[in-house]
Length: 120
Image 1 (tube, rainbow, N blue to C red):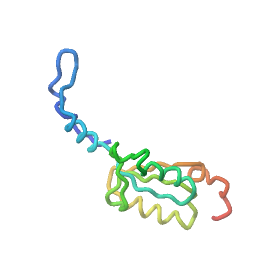
Image 2: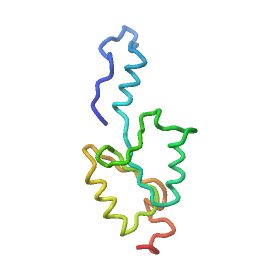
Image 3: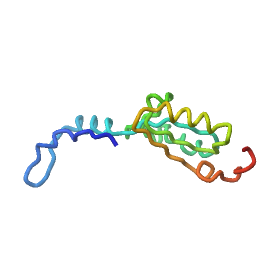
Image 4: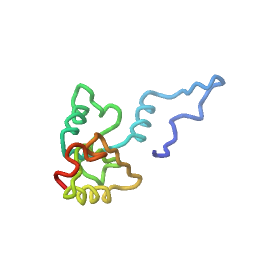
């Protein structure tokens, strides 16, 4: 991940207790968090989209979904990636700044699922 120094890390006691403020700790965790670009093409994305809602709210952990690949450092793919969608996905990946990561979510994304040879 990012090489961000932990806030007030040099101020430790003999028992290895770190003294810092909650605000500094929260800001440090936001600097080290991922900003995903959500790329959903099928039903697996519905399961993931529930994380954006108020019940699970993954924004509080620093995972702020982005709509532009130039602001994201992670692509979460969910659903079948067909031959027609593959160039679009590669183009989005190439537009992302370094370091960049990809997470494939669900059987359809990883293996093609039930529709492996139907829409190619």
